[in-house]
Length: 88
Image (tube, rainbow, N blue to C red; front, side, top):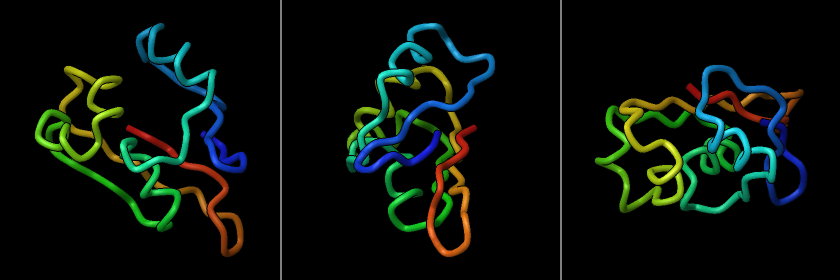
């Protein structure tokens, strides 16, 4: 994803469900209910071992990644600012 103002725009994806890819094409808002948002806003990696364990805190991520288990979101830096993020 690439940061674009108050949202993130999908740049590329691989082996993700079509429903997730379509939702990503619409953009992901930089809101606390998405686990990738803190990664971008703080410039720090975010990880957890089970998406269901953090569903209360990251409800939008839990819905989109149901059944995925562990997740890792890494900010992509450009000089001293966040350009985007990479999620696994």
